Image (tube, each protein chain N blue to C red):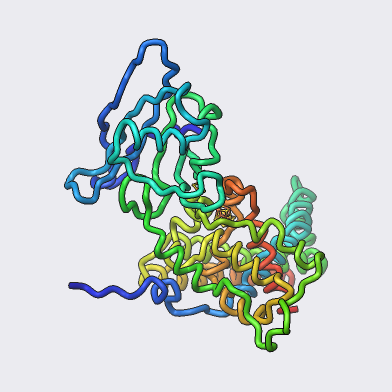
Length: 127
Length: 264
Ligand code: SF4
Ligand code: SF4
Ligand code: FES
């Protein structure tokens, strides 16, 4: 005969993690900030349609443009990481697979973010 | 709300619903309504089936529960379902009717076009026919300690609350724990073992905003968890399927707002 835990023991499980609010709030903040940032980034792209390589690079070297694009990358890296983490936690129920995917998610976001930022810094510094 | 997926689409072998028996057909001149009801007998080796009953609408009360009672009394006494108050106050008769979780006793038959299809409440394990196992959901309700918690010694008479403070509970205290909302919540389907679900979270909020309660912070601590609370992604199915017209999604959003408020 198997003796199972009581329903209350199962419902309580490991207890409350006493966290989650920070990620919830960060997700809302990056949504709101993302709107003007993405609008600015699109403006930069549109204003460079038809421009030649040199003038496009010159545009990206302007401090205001470089800062805007860096912030956009940072903002969406944070947003993307939390969003993907939520999807993984929703649908992946194997604990090992979940842990591996969460690590991969962090790694991917870090790589994409650093690559994007480095490209902008290089353009700003070297041209 | 008719399902446009085939009945057994994606179901594992043991859950596939077979065509069932057909009871009582054409009485000449009678205004017949067809009811298709999910049946499952745990003492039988066979899987679930969908039985068909014809009920004379002129000789039956207006609600789906009236028809179920008539079927049980006059056509097939083996049909098993829960009911008690038959007026939308006990929460026993929640089931999936015409593709939506609702109380059988407050769902008019005549509002449903065509055959009336009745299944157990979504998601919960089936005990028998339309009776589902709510043990886990009720344990989750116990988890939030749904009672007034105070340390201040009780006053001589009752603990007072202003009419304004009491009005804040309107739209929340009326929950009858039928679990229509929880059974309809996709987040609960995927993570119901840890996610508390809309019914329990609405109840939790009802105690969070009770002006007489002294355990607000402790209650928030207990809820602050990526799974218990934050699995709610504001899909809003719960609000659509609450037969008491309450707004569990709003209660959850307000709870999250309280947690943000105490961080800043
Ligand atoms: S709003 Fe939240 S509780 Fe309601 S159905 Fe959606 S996920 Fe579930
Ligand atoms: S909130 Fe509505 S649907 Fe959910 S348990 Fe309460 S009464 Fe039922
Ligand atoms: S029988 Fe009580 S709510 Fe339907």
